[in-house]
Structure formats: structure tokens, C-alpha cells
Length: 72
Length: 172
Image (tube, rainbow over all chains, first blue to last red):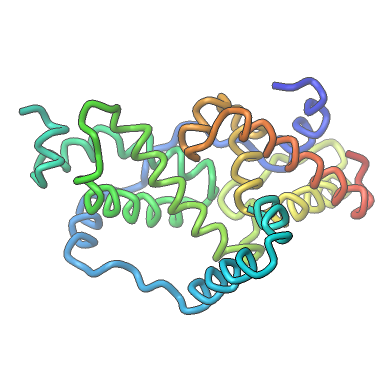
């Protein structure tokens, strides 16, 4: 790990504890089988709207591309 | 035909064998990202459902677990986008008390808030690299990016955190 991150890393690790290896509390296989029998999750309309707005912005104002990439 | 080829052919018992073999690793990875047990369980279920649906695109000559982690990481990122700032970070994993509990708690709360306000991708990279101490290469594989891209995102996350902590009156 980069030395210049050590200070912030230590503070972060005191505020947000690392999680060790942990197993699921229950058998998830029955839920996976149940999920296979159901259709895919519905994508909220707002997600499609945001994606469309981002694409339109990239095409019409190419200058926003670096900003969008930075925010990703 | 080995279990991976059977899985690609749609054999559910082969899929169950793969699930049993890798579920703990995938769940553990997701839990490190989202830090909530019930959400990690839901995301693991969704990820394995997507894995089964995408089996035709899987190359059985490649390792299964990195691919499974990558799918699960994408589902976890979608979850983080929807969850933003709604759930306290320490809901399932409260931090230990320090020598001065009140001051320590206040500082910790500010750091947690700053951390929660990071964009989900930066928060994920910072969690895995800085808190969970996972190797850059492992993070890069799970995100489908280069190691340099991971390093760059860790750098950005740290810079944003430092700026935000300064605004919140915490010396980073």
C-alpha cells in the first residue's frame, strides 16, 4: 500500500472496521432456485432516463465526457 | 465432460456444485463491499442467478470464481447506487470504542459520513483496497479494469475523502 495513504487508511480503518471471512447465515441455494423460476428484476424508469440523458449529453456536448468518466 | 462444461450446457446440478463450491467466497466479497449481511445475501442470490443466465457466454477454460466475483461486484455496485446514504455504514459492524468515547464517536461518524458520500465505485475501491487490504490485482479483476485504474481510483477516493474531512473539521 502506498505510504502516503497510511494516515487516512488508519483513520478509515478505525471508523469502518474491516470484515473478516464470513459465511452466509443460511443456505442460499433454495433462493437461487426460486430466483431462476422468476423473471428478471424490473429496471426503474429513472435508471433508463439517467442513462439516456447521459448518452444524449455525450453526443451533444462531448466536453462532459471527462466529467462523466470522473464521476463513474 | 467436467462440471464447468456441464454448467455451460445448462445442467442445474453442475450449477449447484459450482454454487456450493464458491458461494462463501462470493458472499464474503460482496459483504466486504456492501457491509450488510442481508443485502449481501440478496446480492449473492441475484449474482448467481445472473451467472446462470449468462452461462452461454462463459468460457469453461477460464477460472469460475473471478468471473463470479465480477458479476457479483456489478450487482453490488448497482445496489450501492440505489442505497446511497440511506443506511448507516456501521449497521452490522459497529466500530470499537476508543479512549474518549464521545469525541471518538463524533470523529468516527464524520469519517463514516464522508466515506458514505463517496461515489459508489470509489467507495468500493477504497473499501477493498484501504479497509479490507485486498490486492490491487484482485480488485482490478473483480471490476474488469487494469491495476493502474484501481490505483487511480484509490488516489481519487483518498483525495475526495481528505477534502471532505477538512470541510467537516476532521484533520485527515
